[in-house]
Image (tube, rainbow, N blue to C red; front, side, top):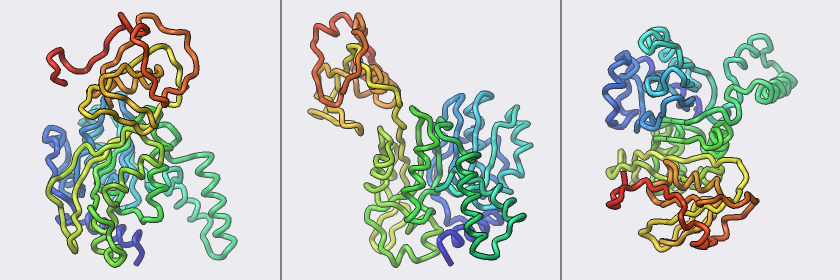
Length: 373
């Protein structure tokens, strides 16, 4: 039995009857849960609550949406102008989630949730469309395999299931660890592809303090149980950095491991990250002051910020550093009069001349007494 077939079988069983050992205890928002059918709640398997990161108006993509619980929770938060897309490969789980679509649409006041069949490591390939293709073009010989691959490539390019730069927030709840190790890098690159510039990621998953040895990875029960396929805690963050994300961090970290196997600790975490904006770096005279407590810090794009110094930044990075992601760590100073815009490399760690920012407008997410809100 392969990793993929083992996972499909285990979660098909989970769609039929609750599997208590597939999930960690999670304190979900009870107000959001109140609207959901009990069957969806009982047959959901997760280790965190990424719905907490959803904003009004978001287009949300839930990877490995399962029973649809996080999708239906997120749908209450995005409002009439938002949309939620769930992607799952398991037909039984998709059937369970879709079973309540009409009921939930009436409760929400609109049908803002969609469930698609696909692999989360290949978000361009519409597997439902592939199923229809295979009904008409069954694979019986080598040439049929070649034709299928050609069809798949055309489908990815011409009618991708999830388009490039189309998602405000990607969420997932204890699913990334189920993907085969050889596909995990591609999976995270796919997440990067579909997120809009400036879009966000909130992934709840299991990580390990040590790399799981091969004999544990070969244990189908441990793998399908979200254990032996977990990424090591440092590798998990670095995989998102390598894919191109910035502001990559552990927003939640369970102090107690969920399980310990052969002295390896497996615990629930939530990682957050942002896809950088694509606009050019234009110098208009902006500056930021890093509050501390460290003497200097570097971000994921290589910019350095010295504590207490007015660091020169481009307009794009000024918006990022004074916004929601980093705003509690920086004081922003917009110039009293903007400089003529020019292309600039702000990764050099330049200190802005105080004369250039004197009288400029300060942007500070912390109150005057120093307490951050």
